[in-house]
Length: 128
Image (cartoon, rainbow, N blue to C red; front, side, top):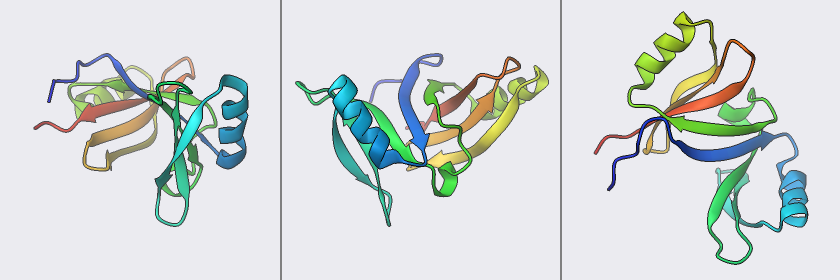
C-alpha cells in the first residue's frame, strides 16, 4: 500500500439530519449516484460520479458519533501524527469539536475548529 502523504485531502463528506433528502438533492443537482453504507440500524451513502461510478464523497446521518458535527462539507486532511497535530491545534488557539477516535480500522481522526472558526477533520492513516 502506498504511503498517504501528510497535508493531502483524503476524503470529503457531509453530515446532516436529513441525509436521505440531501443525498437526493445532490443526485439531482450534480448527477451523483449513490451506494448504501450500512451503519447497523441505518445507512449512510457513498456518492459516485455518474459515468465512472468513482466514489467522490459521503453523505452521512447526524447520528451516533456524528450527532454533534456541523452540517457543512467536511474535508479530511492527512497528518503524520494526530496527537501532535491536536496538541499544536490547541496551542495555536484552535478547538477540538469531536474525537480523536478510531475510524473502521483504517486510522484515527478528530474534527477541529481553527481560530477563524473554520472546521475540518484531521486524519492519521493506520500504519502498516
